[in-house]
View 1 (spheres, rainbow, N blue to C red):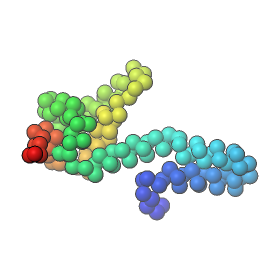
View 2: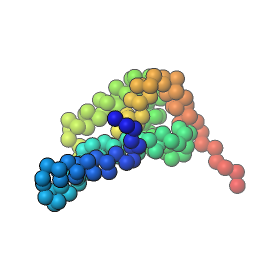
View 3: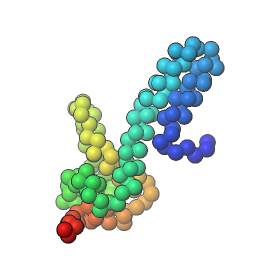
Length: 145
């Protein structure tokens, strides 16, 4: 399968569903509904989460927006002295607990951080995890006016 940029995958998926529906003899309306379902379904939601995380990763961990978004969870992880594997397990357990309790407003921040930590663990970036925690906990230096 050729590489496709993440931002174009939903559109490609929708176009493929439309073409397949038309090839199977469905009406244009049914083909359009199949394309909409493919383009905006569950895979699109997951892809959107990954795109959001990708945008956070394009900024440095010391960036003010990144620090503001993940500060609470990083402070908790640092206060508990957790390793990368332990932090992943903690966030996974919290996400599972929220699903069991059927809380309707999921913590996007927790899910995004969990995805970042899973990526770091997959790439064996244990040293970078420590650097990330240190960068996010460092005091913010204000620009002199």
